[in-house]
Image (cartoon, rainbow, N blue to C red; front, top):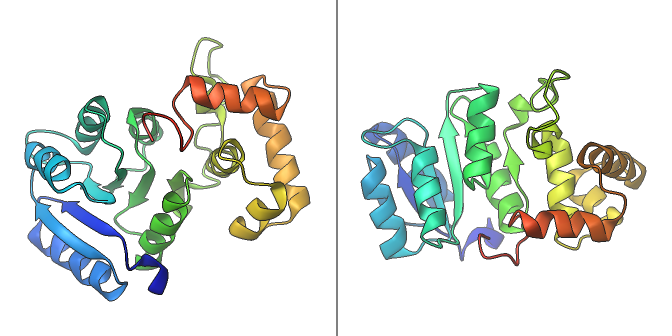
Length: 220
């Protein structure tokens, strides 16, 4: 894919055959794999030293999980796009990854096109959750207490709309990117604002900045 040619990638997975598969996939789509490794500490060193655009991290690696890798990289000011790859569909695991600073959460049993879609989406400032997890009730349990992070109430699609809105995209542009109607975007916007207890776009942007969730923030 022509638009992906400038992208550089680091891969971290403790299974060589998985890494080889991703190297081939990245190469076939014009991406340059700068390095690959098999454990968490090596992933941190490789990302900090090679400074890739993207790092694809296995959730379960020796010595350190992918989520902990992301947490430590963000603490060091890393601005690379960090993506978790996992077999886990557990709600708390997905939330932990996103809260740690993951830009995407992908499933190992997903299709190759999901990785390419995620890279394109995240590159443009979005937060991507595997399509298999959408509509599965993630982030929407009715029994959450009022003290919990309100972001946990958003569905994956609401998270996508939220991310685009706070990074300056119009409803029309979001509709084209997500292949939905502008009216549907407005519906998601009203729903996510209600869940976050925010009443206008300015308040929404302020909410995102306070949590370092905009593309212009230090974390991003």
